[in-house]
Length: 324
Ligand code: XMP
Image (tube, rainbow, N blue to C red; front, top):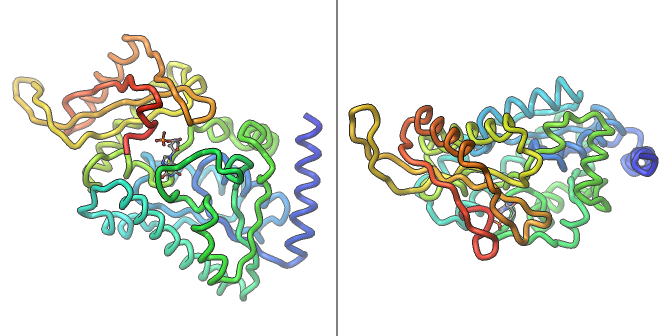
């Protein structure tokens, strides 16, 4: 694809010209395709003068932080610092059930942690960091995707506003003219693993908005395990790419079940999988019964605390993709 190759060369030159021969750049990565492609492009342009920061907010998927860490450092050679702030996030989420409050807390805590980390990089580099990298795409620029509340990633400009002002950073957005499919081609050209290039979108507030009710470490563990089984089976069945987004949600109610010879009163997992092109409207994915039976069987057997599994067959609209 000659246009994409040309884009890479032009963009690398442009980044070098903008950043200068000694300038340094910081940026958050999440493991999603946009931030990873932006980071890899930046690394190709200025090497270790780009500092990537991955904040573990305690509500990422099972083992995701380690996987992203390995892929970005060992696989892609990116200069990455991982900050484990999970306790900080989870303690602030204690007792919170309102989804907008969860989003707000996660968004604000993210900015605090990121700023702290950016200040550390700044000190260690002798104040040479001038730029903040953002993996903003064209649709983000025109804001065609409407979020239900303030995005917890630093995708939206009003969230990074404080950072830019407090730290006197300038914004650098190498993907701002691209659409998602172009970013995927670009990512593939830059040697980013297929798995990451085709990853389903994952909301900034993570599984905190997929745990209906209070987000406790125990609930996080349950939601993570169930989600992991669902995604693992989707991949094993070769369905991952046909589905636009899939996840498990944990419902805050209990149902009766019989496990072995005991009567239990455990929680319910709701599975959601949708097909969509624009995320504004979506249809539920029509799994065959055999597949759902297998996933449900595995979840009730392998995830302690869950005795029932349901599948969401609501279209968007009126149902949103997320449960909160
Ligand atoms: P809904 O649930 O509104 O979701 O149909 C549409 C798309 O947006 C994602 N989403 C979010 N992403 N922060 C994000 O970064 C959020 O607060 C948020 N809420 C929803 C959702 O995963 C889906 O892809």
